[in-house]
Length: 618
Image 1 (tube, one colour):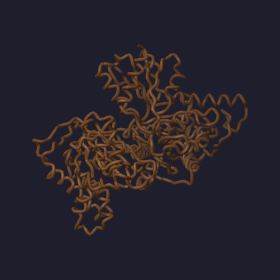
Image 2 (cartoon, helix red, strand yellow):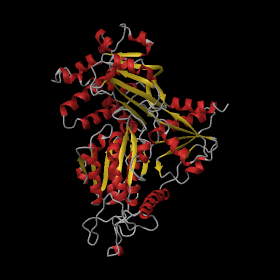
Image 3 (cartoon, one colour):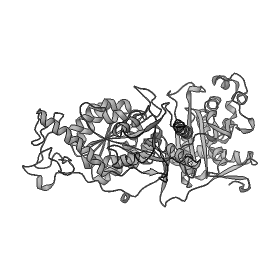
Image 4 (cartoon, rainbow, N blue to C red):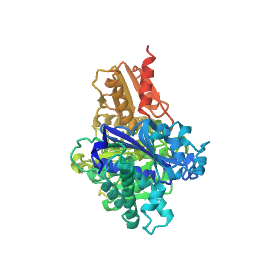
């Protein structure tokens, strides 16, 4: 372990791993994150993928990044990093702008030759001077040379050895922050359990990187990151897509309904399909369909047959599924649609994040087609909101769209694995026994909730058909009667509105004494909460209301908004949620902070946006 006389103690630290898209930066970052979560740190990550599948090696367009914030009171991956690991000149050039003043840079000095510098479009052979970097900030490590030396006797070929460079660099970072190298090796051994030779080599390399830092830079200050006193339990590091999949599995267990996923691969939602496809042992049926329309239609068929039916997609796929979702609306079948939002329109920015599908989720179907819309606030909240989407869909016999986004889907946080008893039972609205006779009809409803009863095919006495044609409210037969159509439209609308009684009120963060309310929804939660806390500390009191229930809105929404002199809505689009709230509450003064660059907010951007809005009143 480290010489404890030369250790600085920090509340939190931000590390950014960067290199070519084939350099394994995501893996190195994930291992560091997992190890940090295991020792009790809060973590928040931001994987930053290039748009190209594989750009030319060493080019600016091919740089992949992974940023992680580790410590106490962590809500975001951080605006700027304390330590930047750059595996080549392009990574340094692309990411130095994210480095804090006085931050540490670790570079693979073997990858900074003249040819490497030209690939990254440096004009000289002195990248530090060109970028305005103090050489004293730079820790030059011959990563490639040392990796080869560590594996000289491994019997591996040179190409395989070079694939371990990321793990040597990880070892150096683990040394710098006193991370337990045994935990890193344990993660590696699990990751490569089916390739023991690769696991052994990487364990040797991560130890070599740690030892290099300890032996070569013994006089350099290292860091200990403070930990929280966590709630007792088993913790892991989990990303949003995995948490979504596990939340669906929990809902299946709690509802007693088998889980069916009908999906088509699409960035950045595909990992949900991958995760559920691995869970046949839990009875999950994951079916990769030929296209988006087949995905939603197979799920509708599974729902009719009595399954907990789910389909997953991103913005372009949600557009293709719209007619199918409308069928589920008129058939009043439970259906969960997961939309992992990305930059658009069209193919847009497949690997980047946005919140631009909100209006499509709310209104993107023909006719009067009301639907429940939820949003997840963080990677771990994806578990809770996936469960909640299933609960509402089943108990209220309706399609539900759950909006996540690329930032929280790919990002991760430390998560305490819950016990099953911590989540409520989900009660399907099956046809009651006393109605299973000649008086039952497919659109017979619970008079209090207006929820249609769920009749499972094969149940004696409940033979029936559903479809996309309008039905008579009384007989459930096909009907084109104008008055009946209006009645059915209003029944479906009121059924959704009634769900406001079955969801929690929106929570306000702050002491309630501010006259400014910052409002957000979805994956911006961490940045907005941190910004509100920082503004309050700086003498500008700001409260935060963050919405996870979009339609219907929580019952106390009007009261909360009208409590404040000014309301500022911050979102990663041109103002969709602000428009939505303004239409519903025209008497509320709503200002806006918008960003649409394919990147999450920086906390500083939100703070500056709030201050700009406040300055307009002076």
